[in-house]
Length: 369
Image 1: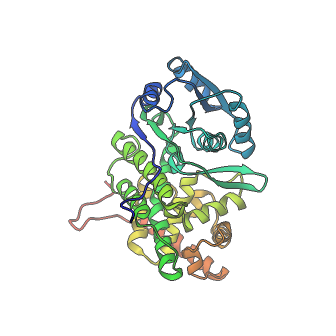
Image 2: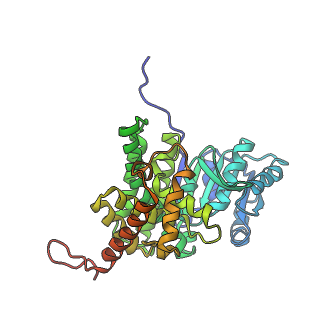
Image 3: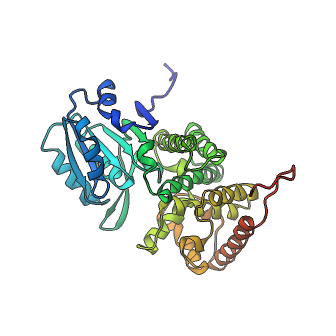
């Protein structure tokens, strides 16, 4: 019998609104995730005490655990602590570090994981991947995606604005990643999943075309839902391919070559995506990406990330080594050191011109007023 449809392990609950965290116990009980209320709740060391003080009365059956850092050791420590008791589920409340550690621990313990995002810095809160520090630097680990995702806009509004803007760079980079995937499909025969690409593309376009900013609830909702869709697109694809291409290779190279100097992940992949579009020679996509990043106050050029052009050229040259076997525009262009330096300088100049020249609509209306 032929397949009528495929089964996708998507979250059974996605709740993006003000006050979502306050209803956590009721929501989990109603969805039969934790009808007894026996939950392990993992929070970070900095913001965790505030969350616990505000919400622990609403979670009387929960035990609270503090995540010490975003490392494999921290995740294993959480596993050892949580396994001493029986729980229905494990809940991670925090940013990417807390959620990645919690996802890894949930996978090791065989528990459903609930992600409560306190910022929108990247798409990890709904993805089947966690990134943790290890003895070799940082590693990506495949894990089950969260069974439920909550984004409390009250918490998001308290997050550092830079952390929220970072999510814009993360999701905008989807379009460049999909372009890399499609190129690999046509030139190398790599299998491409149309549904995964559609989810990732739609999420990016919704954010890029939204007229609002991070002070606007409708924009934050669109951004949060888009990041969830990005995570689900990776579940569908069975890899990070729909959301990770040359843009992410460049970001990984920054992390490896310049530890301690890196910015937010979404800031780095945003610049990486703009450079990738420039390298492809796709002017419209390059302009649209630069315009979006600049409008939301994100880095556009290497200097905005704190790097000289020579340093950024070294980063671009090293980037393909971060994902061996993944074909992107960096590999396609067969870049020599000399050509990389020329392209980086040209990219920098064109980006500068784009963000400083007046932008006029066909009707003669300025887009900068």
